[in-house]
Image (cartoon, rainbow, N blue to C red; front, side, top):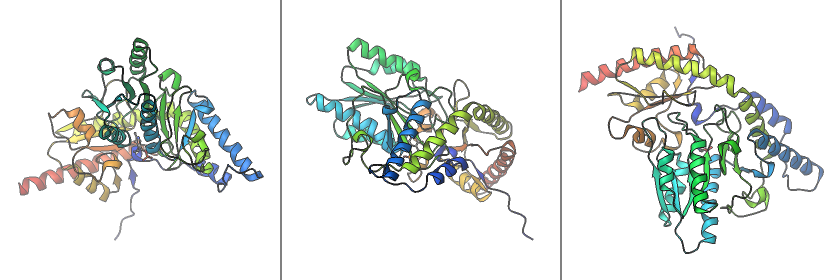
Length: 400
Ligand code: PMP
């Protein structure tokens, strides 16, 4: 006899959210994209739609429409922000070495452009984070010097859920600029993981010059993203072609995707408070259960201060976390060991290594919840988790 298969529980929303029904409907209503660059009726209509989406998105973040640059993805937005800022500075300072600052726990699409600039001869500093995954803005202030061109710090971390104090960071940067009488350093933030759940995303209140936002993590289409580029901030393009997106990102815009992005962002921001409150309760429930029922657990997600409401990241002593994820998958539960972008690489997550500081093992598992996650899902997950961890421990005892 086969039992009815129970539904799969998807707990990997931090690496990508399913596309929402209203986003799908809006994209279908718009239909297939024509190139908005034409001068015939359909193209003009597409251009109007494109500009309406730009205006709507700008309003959500307290930006001006001409500060919104559409790019194909968050990876491209981060690359444009980082490489574009440094290249623009180098054009005006051909005999100087640029200095750039980021943190040890950024996403690969920030760390890799930093590595590339390092290879090209830039001076690079990686700010350490504390055990909760936060930098010290005073330490940042001490690092800034006359040739510091860029500071790139993510608003929230997608692996452990830590949130940075953006206003303090912006304040440190503003003070440094004032003292040096310079427009530099430019402040960029990757807000991809913050967009669904954090209350404050107003670019002026946050004090950022560049901000990356993605549709892929907010129930919008994959390959839809925005780089907020504050008026007066100088960057140069890193790809070359037509004059779309004021030449910052040349190439035909995918208007259907952009329509979907606008709807997804609007929905995300209007549901932000309610959905965050709901998920905090589910998350607290999960953490309490785990702490009460499993031994040798370290919760890597910060438990104090501002934190994302949907991520539970933990390490269990003596457990192979990759095997744990595979065993959970077999039970119908999708979780992850580290950021999907680095999943093919050997070794533990660089984020967990940065917060563990060499004092403990750094294997980890991340559960990231979403709109469909319920307490009943958590009940099933934690029961399976307990059973699997027991099973794994017994197997280890038998063989070692
Ligand atoms: N930044 C962060 C914080 C992310 O989580 C991701 C996606 N994992 C990206 C950037 C890159 O997004 P994409 O893969 O859609 O380009």
